[in-house]
Length: 110
Length: 117
Image (tube, rainbow over all chains, first blue to last red; front, side):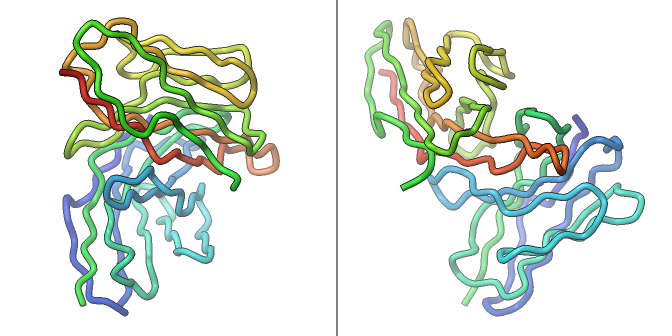
């Protein structure tokens, strides 16, 4: 599974867009990019995943570069409740397990 | 409510004691997982079960055993607890989307906080 690199921490003002970057330069063609978040002491929560096309759902948007070596998770209007550790994971398909790194601590400030 | 249920939520064990952590999901997911999370660190995979009847070791399996009792239930057993096993344990499940060719819908339980003294 490809290694991912994320900044250790980021800050964002409430109501503004939060853009969380992730590098996965060794990603292979059959690996998806998954994003999860973990709010303090809770179990991780699925946000979004994609292969090569940009994806959007009710929580966030995922922008994957054309060469697939990096991606950005966008929370369009961050709220205080979005403060969490965000994990970017590159993983093969078909019943494979998720491998978590250290993630990015996002703090949304009033 | 649909989801992953873990029991117990909290447990204190003495070194050498044994116990079983229970996990059940009601989403008809075929894959289930056990992770541990130490303070300030990411989750590490202990064991997983890709489908009913199969189990495989993850990143940190030593000191643990698992049983996939049926499609719904996946238990984690500590035969002889050690202080190094003090951690928060998360169970998760997922299903495979044939149309997209990917696993998705990973759902985590709320965790079991285990302290071994």
